[in-house]
Every structure is written in structure tokens, then in C-alpha cells.
Length: 187
Image (cartoon, rainbow, N blue to C red; front, top):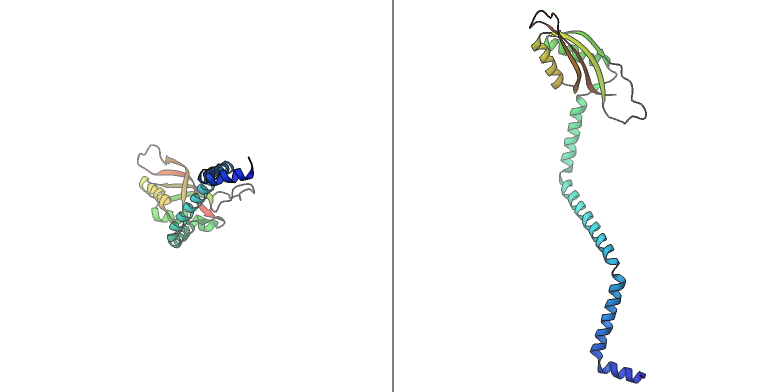
């Protein structure tokens, strides 16, 4: 076949030749781009997820100032209820105030020795301060003391509580309670 015969064939079958050339070009393009499709789908999924996250962040940020204010107020309420670890007199005064309000009698009151956390310990904002308290009174007064500790001005956790009658032969008489508790404090 000569060049003139090829040109004549192309002119005679122009549409068929053009369709064949376009089909071959599309096939080659699909062959070379077929491995790019999964990557493009992954990029699309990542961008969609990022867009959804940004949309959610924009929606959630509408009340951010009010939420931040509420958090500051809540932190202030928590800080107001903390005791100071090094202020032994103020810490013990809390229990003496409870004694006068409830009518119980404090037999023994000790703040446990506080040791600073080791360097490897996790950093916390609050420190539990241990106390050992022995009190004497009737059942209702002691129950009132425990309620006031539970709902009082400081966060309190009872570790142990031992209740014993002062006179085992007298039912309904005076009781002695030994309480081991922790108040939440700051350094």
C-alpha cells in the first residue's frame, strides 16, 4: 500500500477511521488513568470528611463564647470549694465550725501529713488532703455531721467510718465515730 492509497482509504472511510482513532485514544487514556481512580476517590473522601468536620466546627462555634463563660464560672465554683493544702489552721477550723453547728464533740482531729507528688507522678490540679476525725454525739447529730460533710462547702470523700457506742450496755446512747476522709484541695 502506498501513501496515496492510504490517503484515499482515509478519505473514503473518514468517519470509521476517526471513530477508531478516538476509541484507541480513550482506551489508552483509561488504561493509564485506571490506577489514579482509587487515589482520586480516597482524596475525595478525605476532602469530604474534612469539609464535614469544618462545617460541624462552624456550627458548634456559634455558642462558643457562652460555653467558655459557663466553663469559667464552673471552674470558679470548683476553685471556691477547694481547701489550701498548707493552711492547717483554716482547714481544721472547718471541722470546728461543723462541731459548733451540729452539736457534736470532736475528740481527735488531725490533718494527715501531706507529701508532694513524685516527679514521675501525673500532674493534677487538685490534691486530696487526708484528715482523721473522731467525734462523739447522738445518732441524729452524727448523721447531720455526715450530711454536712457530704454536701458542705468543700468536696469530701469518706475513706472509712467506724461507729461504736460509748456505753455498749446503753442502747440509743452516745456514739463515737472515727472518720478517715479526704478534702479536695490545691497547693
